[in-house]
Image (cartoon, rainbow, N blue to C red; front, side, top):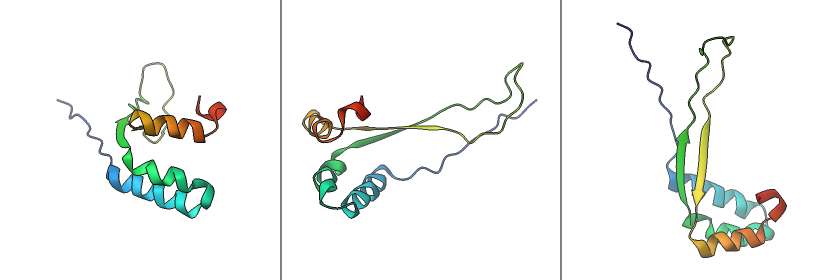
Length: 91
């Protein structure tokens, strides 16, 4: 009987992640300060991407596992961020 492999992710605490992003934004100067003020209001969601390099018919290729990172904001903060950030790059 084959053992199932277990993969673990060492993910940063969501509050710590937002705090580090806030610190980076503050270090970026005055133009990033308004965004840094609302960044802690977000909710972080991590979703691991499945990595299946052994599919039938494909050559084995090692890759690191991927991770989708989504940050949700209340509507008022989201609208603020959308107005401040470049719409062409966000959409």
